[in-house]
Length: 202
Image (cartoon, rainbow, N blue to C red; front, side, top):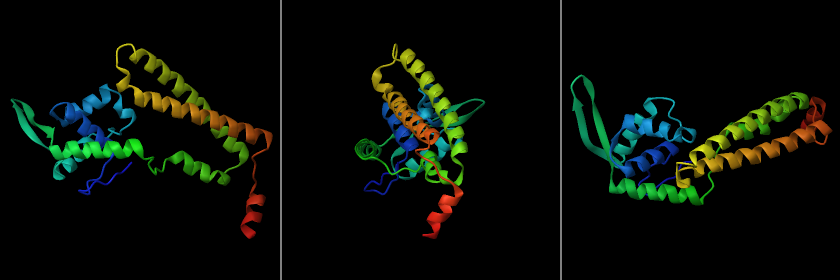
């Protein structure tokens, strides 16, 4: 989700997470990336590319949301820049969170795009692919529920609610996919190239 602030600073999931980490204490980019992975926040923000954190911090710094706190120097190791959040950064983070929590974002994930063009394949193939997706989702849900139960023993629920949300979304999607599979299997939902061609002629 992208949210515009009065200062025209663009929000992003990664920028939001980085500012929230710096709200805890000043830290360097490597530590931020490490914490994102340790806390499993890489399920909600993409830090696959090493440079993504550094590039986002550079943008936040240019926009005045973070600043250099100090530079760590040690023999035989590269200097490490430690960043801290600014007052403008704190205010902007609150603004981003308010918008993200209150307003559904207009997002463009892949699956709805595939559904919008499902007529480009056959009902039989669509059913086959949806069966695979349903099986994968069932595995993902089972694994996530196991992890959530284990984490709940030592981690406050406040830090696990995004996992609860992901599981709820996956469960809802799985129920819906199974209903569509049933509709295709019974013929309540079907199509053919001839039918599509006849529609295009009208």
